[in-house]
Length: 444
Image (tube, rainbow, N blue to C red; front, side):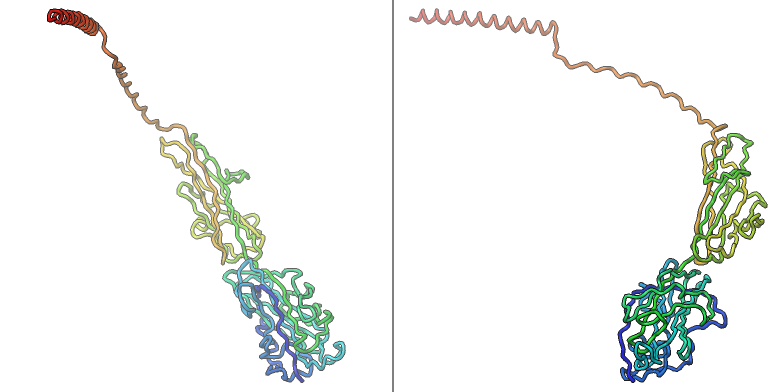
């Protein structure tokens, strides 16, 4: 009996990491590992004479069907049995489903002996948080041999992560439903022990009625999406005066009064605002030189110690205090007091800001910081700088005289002399003319 082959359906996917602490009874890889298999050698390959899921190897459209459960992302390339993931990714898990019985056993209207009955699926998603996680896929039917097959897919991350199913994302695509048909969210379960009696969604070809015919032309892909979640630590630093609940980012301390109370209370709040457990968490504080710890004042408050427990004086300020695991949404506090040594010299005045920094970090979570401050002010009893002498007033420079034409006796005299010279000249000229005329007359 021959087998018809068809191309794999192209399904755009994104893949994810699944997390679990696997008990001894859990599987790794495909199971049952020793079930009978058929090797595809061409269209004339002899098929199974009974319904059986994913027991062909060397198929042109999938390869080894026993490894039917895998994952991939838009950036990871082909689907894989092991996938590296990071927080914030949305991944698609994929199951390939093929009944390896001969097509001639499907009967009329899928009523033959080769059709798998009450076919249903289960996908295990772990609830743990880890850097190494595992998910399982199961195909179950009432009349197949074996009655179920399983496969696993592993996910690895550089930071602890958890996985979360995206509701409504499970779909089956086949020749009758090339664009996919929705499957119930009950396909996902969180018990890593296979329970064939657990209510699970049925699958089929035309209808999702549990009747799954044999032959490659009836194979299917099921996909579902999950999100990779990671921890997200936040830290907040505040300051106030002892006994006050008015926590502030900055506290003003006036040093004009020599008897001023310079004791301050500090609060560090940490919180996991992510959706995965923060592990190996640490909180630390850095005191500046002008702040001196009040011995025995460091206290730690969290859900297990709502009244607070004392912390060694050097713990918070020498490498930090390990707080272990911080669950999603959980928070805690550190509270301590300091005295503020005056930052001013005896005759110095002004305003000086003293900053106190807090830091939190966890495995795979970079260190984050926040700070609060005290602003010290002083404007009394200050040394006054000597008053500089008043500089002498410079003398007023003389006003320059304008360069006017000269007038006076000399000028008038020159004018008279010039006028007289002209008059005398005229008289002499007339006389010379008369003399010349007389001379001419005489020569006649």
